[in-house]
Length: 253
Image (tube, rainbow, N blue to C red; front, side, top):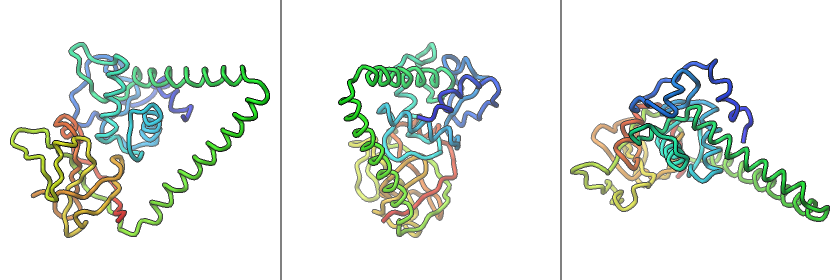
C-alpha cells in the first residue's frame, strides 16, 4: 500500500473539505473531523484509487479499481466502518473515508506490516531464501496481473465513451427487479449490470465502467438515451448517494 496515502490523515488539517455528494451529512465519527481531509462519493483522485486498493487487499472491495469514489467504494467503506465500529450515534454508516476511517486502515495495515517484519526476522537462512523466492514469484505475478489489466484496456475492440452516469436499484416498491434482458436483480442484488441506450452500446455487451468495474449491458431505461448510463447498485441509499457523474465507459466485447 502507498505510504503517502496512510499519512494523509496526519496532514489533513491542511486540506480543503471535499463536497459530500448527495449523502446525508455525517454527524459523528468521521464527521467529527469535518474540517479535515476526507474522501466521499463522487470524488475522483489518486487517493481514491489507493483507498480502493487498500480495501481490496483487506477483502472489502471487489472488481476493478479506478479513481472514482462510486457506489462500490461507498459500499466497501461502509462495510469496513461496520466491522470496525465507526458509526454515528444513531448507527448510520455514511461511506465517507474521513480521518477516523483512514486511521483504522492505517492501524490494520501497519499491524500486518509489523507482523510480516517480525516473521522475517525469526526465519533461518534457508527460510529466508525460500521467502525471497516466493517474494520474487509474487512480484512476477503482480507484474503479470498488471500487464494483463493494461492489455485488457489497450486491446479492447470496442469504443470508449465519456458518459453521464446515474445509479438505480431494484430494491424499491413496485420494482419488478427484472431487466430488459431478463436478469433478475432481486436474486443477485450485487450484480454489476448497467442500463444503456442500445443504439450506442449493444445489449448483452460487456463494458468496463470507471469506478464501477466490469458489467453487463443488460438493461434499458426511458431516460437513458445517447451517451448516458445507469448503474445498478444494491440499495436505494447507494443510488441516491451516487448522484450524477461523468465516467469513462469502455466496451470490451
